[in-house]
Image (cartoon, rainbow, N blue to C red):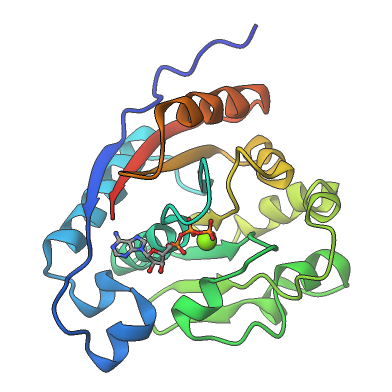
Length: 234
Ligand SMILES: Nc1ncnc2c1ncn2[C@@H]1O[C@H](COP(=O)(O)OP(=O)(O)OP(=O)(O)O)[C@@H](O)[C@H]1O
Ligand SMILES: [Mg+2]
């Protein structure tokens, strides 16, 4: 039996509801509060999450973290995007991958093209540089989902994903992966198995304790490592 990860649930940081002030033209579409309002309480909370993640992963450089949740619309993409910006502000080389091949949204948050992305990298002979989009946020690059017409499970269960992660780590300090819910979708379980750590987004009012226990059990069965949870108080 696999030894239970003692680090589980140590990362409990609240991300309160984003500012209710009238949004600026840039903030309106992006939900990137860490960029539009770096001195806010929320940005500060993202810095705390960033620091805690460093401690929880024993300050090891070059790691791949999966961000997921128990169900739909709990804030995974929003949290992952803001965390990625926050990490890049710390001069880290960050790659944010949109592995939600069912309902991709990272390209919308960053307002970048999704003509080419992860699915193309996994199905065609392409180099990482050809599919990654540079952003205006320091060393933050984004790998959007690419076309969503493939079978996500088949695609992500492929051994090339593991090889891809290995290759990617030469160019980045940290890789954050946005994904669909782990309770519902098999490909997220596959990713949990291949990542260095899994972070659960828990949403006040949406996430219930039974589903959270189920997610924890699924991560364990997938031989993933649950390193903590982010409490999204949306
Ligand atoms: N803390 C927050 N404050 C305000 N709005 C939020 C917050 N977290 C998420 N939202 C909003 O809630 C909606 C769902 O968030 P998001 O897309 O990040 O969820 P998700 O878990 O990635 O969804 P899916 O399961 O479809 O991928 C979005 O419109 C997002 O802007
Ligand atoms: Mg999402």
